Each structure stands twice: as C-alpha cells, then as structure tokens.
Image (tube, rainbow, N blue to C red):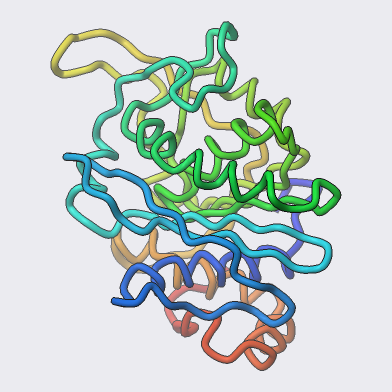
Length: 270
C-alpha cells in the first residue's frame, strides 16, 4: 500500500458504503443501510445507454463529513456505456480549455447525475470534509465527480477512494484530477483486469481514431487471487482483502453497523 495517505479504517468504511450502493440498486424501494452517525441526504440517478435511468448511489452527511458513493455496473446498459471509450471534452462542465478529455460513456453518465449532486452539495456546509468513493464504473464516476466538484461551485477539494476503477481520461484529464483532489487513493488488485482498461492507447473501431488514457494518481496495490476474472474484480473480495489487513477494525465496523458490510469470503486474502 504505497500511497502515503492510505488508511485501512477509511478504506474499509468506504468499501462498505460502495457495497450499499449495490444493495440500494437491488432494493425495489431503493433502501440501504445508513451507518451510525450519518443521515441520508440524496439518492441520485444517472442515465446509462439508451437513456435508461438507474439509481447510481447516494450522498450522506455526518457532523463533520459528507460522503458521495457511486455504484458500479449492474445492468447490460451499464456495460454498453463502459464500452463507449471514445473521448469527449468537458462533458462534466469542468476543465474547459485544459485539453482534458474523458471516456464518453462514463462522462455522459456522470453528467446526467451531476446537477442532482451539485444542488445537494450547495445546501450543505462548505466546512465539512468531502469524501467521494466508488467501485469499478463507480470509481470512474467518482473520479469525474471529484474533478467536477473541485472546479465548479461550491468548489470543494475532495478526498477520493476508488476500488477497481478503470482509466477515465487522457493525460490532461489525469493532471486536472491530480490538482483537484485533496488526496487520492486508487485501490487496485493487480490480478483484476478492469483497472487495465481502457488501454493506454485505444483505437476506436468505428473511426480508427486513437485516444490516449492515463490513470490518476494514488495507486495502492491490494493483491489477492479470487480464482476467476469476476472474483478478482468483485467488491466483496476487495473488502475481504482489506479486512485481512485489520480484522479488528472490520469486526468493529460490522458490530457497530449490522448489515453495512459485505460478507467476508475465504478466497481473497491480501
């Protein structure tokens, strides 16, 4: 875990909240476990491929902190959006003129949720720490959100923790993010294929145009072998590997918030 600001307790807590974004999506009522000391401010939606509106996460607030959590892929339309890897400029209305460009599918999805999130943030205290998190596609959306919230009013520099995030944009976008985030922890299982896509150089099958991708800063390796492509990417296994780093902390988190955390598996150990 080379990233200097990595904190196991924080990573476990935010991974548990990422788990709750999937619980929220799977619930017909959109319900999920809100941790002790926090209140639910907003559940937000985003548009996937074919303008399909889906619940994509939530915003929570405590006495000193605001947390935005984004869900990863859960539907076929999400996966189609993941595959639209051409780049567009300033889709999130941030960084105009910087040369920044980002993944079209991710960017349009985030843009469809951005005003909901921004309106909620404007209603909350600017003095509270802002944390943004997400798993997989949710990590990409969290990365876009971090840049957006730093560059547009109310201009908050967030702490960002992502899990298994793909690459999001070109080198100019990565530099823009690196200036925008107060700190960035990008947790990666080296055996997970998703953080390796899109490739550093992507050629559009339709236009043959080349697009260049670069990860944002803050990589923290969390190696585990789940036994399959899907298991190496599963959030439950990321959480299990994190829990093995500090079992007492994981137990304390679960005891204080029954149902908040994913069920620890036996296959993923850091």
